[in-house]
Image (cartoon, rainbow, N blue to C red; front, side, top):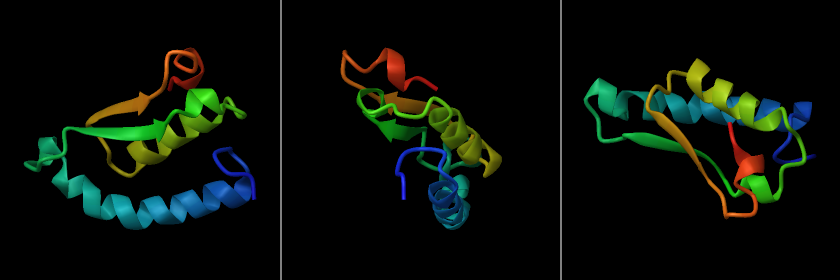
Length: 85
């Protein structure tokens, strides 16, 4: 298993998890009257960044499941440019 990549085994697991989790999160978004105003997509991926297709995949996976609020990442100053969506 290659984590935090677009390796098929990992993305299949993420898709199953997101299918379950996002069905609970979507109604709680601010635009639906809930308290969630933003979603953190990754944490310090810029320091890791082994797969340039990974962040676009994660972003699309969230949006395809109904996430409409602000998407953000958290990176240190050294990884900031590599961890963008």
